[in-house]
Amino acid sequence: MNPSANQRFKFFPQLNELAKTHWLSSSNSLHLELTDTYFNSDSLQDTFLRAIAAERLLPVKEVLETFEFFARIRKDTKTSFVADLCCGHGLLGILFAMFERKVDRVRLVDKKDPESRQKLLTIATQVAPWVAEKIEHDTSKISVDDDWIEPGCAIVSAHACGVLSDLCLDIAIRSGGPVAILPCCYPRSACQAPLALQTSFGLEAAFDIDRTYRLEAANYRVRWAEIPPEITPMNRLMYAQRR
Ligand SMILES: C[S@@+](CC[C@H](N)C(=O)[O-])C[C@H]1O[C@@H](n2cnc3c(N)ncnc32)[C@H](O)[C@@H]1O
Image (cartoon, rainbow, N blue to C red; front, side, top):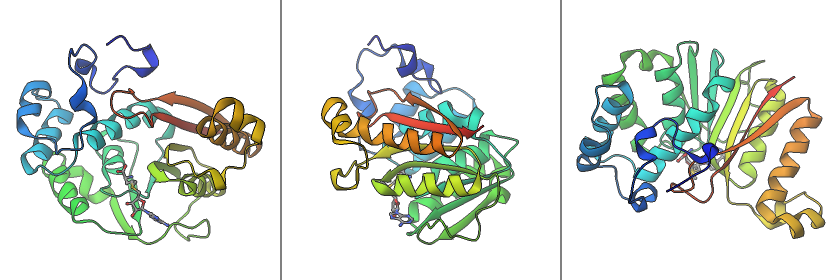
């Protein structure tokens, strides 16, 4: 494995020198055999991972992609109030609550309230008691008219499917705060990019180029980055701050 610097593991650098990487994209639950081998330090992140593994709560892929996404956006996205939209299990928002002192409030928003979220929050609170008081739940569909949207609040979202990622961008443009998305599912019918871009660069890049121009037009400075492709080929992320 010889990834470019951009694609190396940042949160878990011990995974950069692996001979076998197939398990990094596994949809099987993280389990103690793996954590005992690769995440066995006394650090907060390893302690948290072992607690997740003990319950077999989340797939390996989802855990690693969320940590590596967080590692790339945390510095530019942390504000006192962070909203994790289409949060599912809520791990991304929980990482902001756990690792960023500057973050006082994290709103976890999803139209569903999966059992895994409450279990994950219980585990997170056991290893990092300060997490509980920062988290607020919101079981609803996201909308640009939501009344919780405050000026300057950060919007983050991992794998909001298709145009839900665009809705996250619109919500951020309304708040004026920083934004970070790790898009997935690129529906051709919803792509606003010119056909020439879609043909030359492919649907996914064209979609994200169009998103970039939309954010830049709203006075955001946009950056692209990648999480390690060994976790998922859907590895491009976009983060932006208003100028
Ligand atoms: C692919 S999952 C991603 C979950 C999580 N962020 C992750 O990284 O694993 C997409 C999530 O979006 C949620 N969702 C779908 N439509 C939504 C909507 N209109 N408003 C809020 N959440 C929605 C689903 O319930 C699901 O949890």
